[in-house]
Length: 617
Image (tube, rainbow, N blue to C red; front, side, top):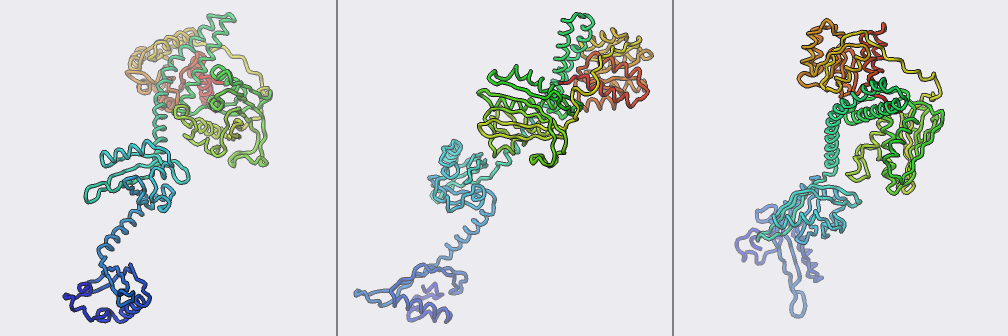
């Protein structure tokens, strides 16, 4: 006590009062406090205060006082115990400052005891998990974050901490609201002065959004890889289909009987359908755009019916209804086929035990009285395609999300979450929109609205009969193509139509051959993708030799970049593979004998070129 008041000798304290050491105001307050204790007999315990004594500022004391009684129980005095708790307060202050810093971080900081019960719960933990510290302190961490469900991840983490003293990894957790999240966790043991494990410190960061973005990035990369693969596959398969199309034309002249013509027509249709499937693959994997034209959606629906009847389970019945005077729409038949096919596949997946799939096409007029009309949709005539099923239905709470990219309720092996997103984008690109109506257990209906032309298949002039192919007059054609089957098929069809043909397997040999016959060659027919020297390089060299040379570029990579490369190098025309004998001969005739109106001729040539791949409907 002497040291507390700044005196070296305890004897110097005897006979003194607080008035000898403290300011009178403070001394009076203490004296009154002590008299109250003596008078009432009630002790005073645990008063903590900050004092300045004995020249030592910023001291903290804890004071306890109680009355002293004699054997008769009469109060005869008072004893006071003053403890110097300055060091403890400094430790507490540092802990408070550290806690404030910990609460500033967005990470969840948890301190667990040896039984995995929560001892400390930071503000970051409150934000991430939704529980406040008072609700979780003292509870097992698994009960709070995993809701009493046994978590193999948490068990593995605790085992690793026990074996190695620390653990880093990802954990799945559940928030107070029931939301599932993913956290990146760093855990380590905290040991006491005797090196015994006192607690476990865990620092968790919410990475749910990061993981979603990573999944989307990986999916995008996968789609990009698929796109590159699709381009190579399309190139090779287009080279396979091209001689088949040319051969069909040759065989039509050699098999004039009706049965032969029917077989060849079926072959022609299926090869064109294969070409369309390849084109469709490029549309969605590489962003290739399609050509829009007037089409009948009921024809597309019938084509789809033929496809799905052969592949869907027999337990699913398929019905199609359409008015005879259905309006036409302006669009890309391949893309619209993909929309309807995706909706039919989703309907099939919604009916694992079978059911009814119906495709209903109707004419509708939309105006401002239609409350479900999207804000960006125009009023007017539409063809509405309604694809309905009797399946499990779609919960109302997720109906607003089903058109978002990568959103899916299917297992990872059964869907990517892109089907409906692609459908929505295609329909929007055609000026239309999609709506959905569904109740769980009562099936679902998707309504596709596409702007209509208000002309039906019965309108207009009858379809003209095909004209005979224009014959050549002995002009020399140089065909540069690395695929031998295409080379030989093109040579045979052109020779049968009155042309002379010389061939080369690559650009380098083609240029040498042109040098030998430069004064005879009327037109060069050249593939853009060849070994030794590609088409673009060969075209540039041929144009350097003869700037007026007429050149037709062809390619199995039928996309805008390939066409642009051919035209920029100097080609006047471009034909995508697979092409028919008709397109080849007509394009050759058009470039050798251009119409007076060059602009109209080029437009017609482009239309012919795209018509060469056929079309569903």
